[in-house]
Length: 403
Ligand code: HEM
Image (cartoon, rainbow, N blue to C red; front, side, top):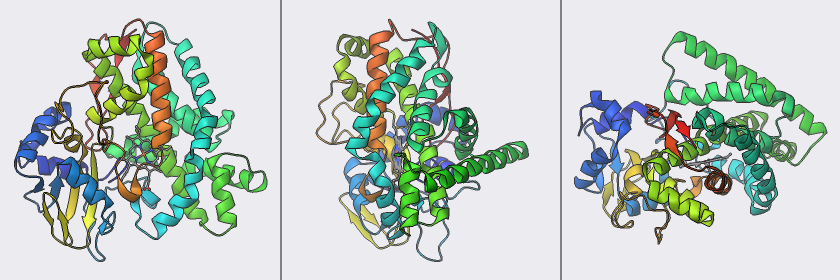
């Protein structure tokens, strides 16, 4: 994968070496016992179908940085991680050098620290406007965790106010499709949504070519004018940013909500010291990584601390295991926002594909958690949160809360 797609059913088949694949609901509910059993079999685990899986933090980070560990398989080899509909297809998260390098370089200026400083005030205003509209009981996902990142990414892309509702509605359909499309009606809905968003992006690009602003699309059309990117690449980059914005930070806020309701001592700590918000962000990302699995192909024999990956093999990076590796995180299954961290978790990946939006989602998380701590008297579930049964995104679709 990457961001959100691909590994899906294969991962479950792999886990099926250890636990009945039919037990997938239980696996999604709590994958950690399965991951621990995988870890117990050795750091470089070879599944029955020949796919390798890495569970240790050091092997994962080492392999993510290896120049011969690539997103695409060896020429002529099948990409078994690819799903039927993948809105990320053609975007640079699924490219290797040199195209990846070129497109990432063009997009990166939009995420520089200066841009983040400029966004802070706007994100704070959006956060408080959304919180002002809430009563004391609501669904965290539809009323806050979803709308905040979606509004932020709309601002970043410069989506006009008149189009934001449409953008949010269709963007959600495209994002949900990353879990797979179950029925013909879903496929039709997806295709219609995709066409609509494409039309919107096409219009915005045309507008920005004549009247550039300081949004990402303006940055991209400037690069297009300098012939650094093609119009198609511009479109896939916009789709990548849309999906990244819709699918990840959303789940980080949702996961935090459930974690704080389950760990009232940690919630009390955050309420007493809202300055702990940035530490809380890191611990939530470590403890429940929204992107739990990454994938790569070994283009040559790769030696890692924990074993060897033969040339040509497909590799799953079990981020949920690496982030609970006792070798680097003492008492890894304890949720502790005051934990001293000597190494970074791998929730944002590593190497050349390290999440471009990491500074943005850290900023959003910090602002959101601080505001929640300052404004919510309590954080209690009023019903069972509904977990998404996705192998590629770890999060919830519904979290009923009382604050
Ligand atoms: C890549 C996670 C938020 C934009 C990635 C990767 C991960 C990740 C694990 C690496 C994929 C791989 O190596 O295969 C997350 C998490 C987020 C988050 C956990 C929130 C908590 C965002 C946001 C944006 C963003 C808000 C932008 C709006 C990107 C982009 C890439 C990426 C453009 C591709 C980078 C490349 O291929 O060079 N993200 N992400 N992410 N992310 Fe994020």
